[in-house]
Image 1: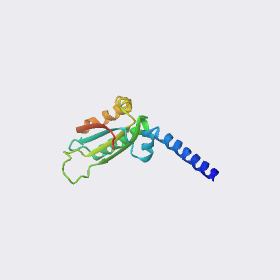
Image 2: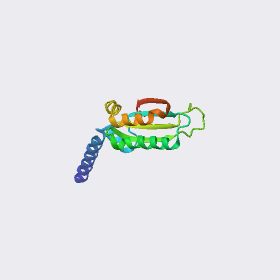
Image 3: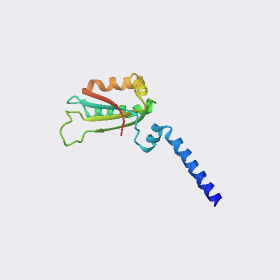
Image 4: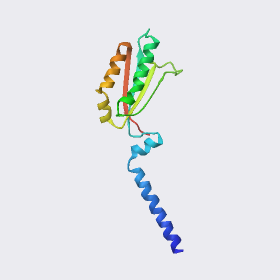
Length: 138
């Protein structure tokens, strides 16, 4: 009986230590779960000029999609084109979501040569750009 009780206490202590270890890095724990709570999200919306050739749009999409492989500060990246039936898009067609660990990494991304190179490639075709950043919360 005493051995069983000691085993139970030992298991509880081991489980408690393991749980405490996992919660010491909330960002990493949430990142593994896919939520990335506390990370900085950089949302970029593009409205392209009328008549922008489809091959230019494809080149811009590809160039932005390559930034995560060129800029180490990017933790996650996704994008898509508008398909909302609400009619509230104001002509914006492309949405990019770039995730950073924190504002410091975002601030290092903005002047990064690869980011600036992308902006110069795409800028002539923009009618408007809208950017909003936020820290992910639940």
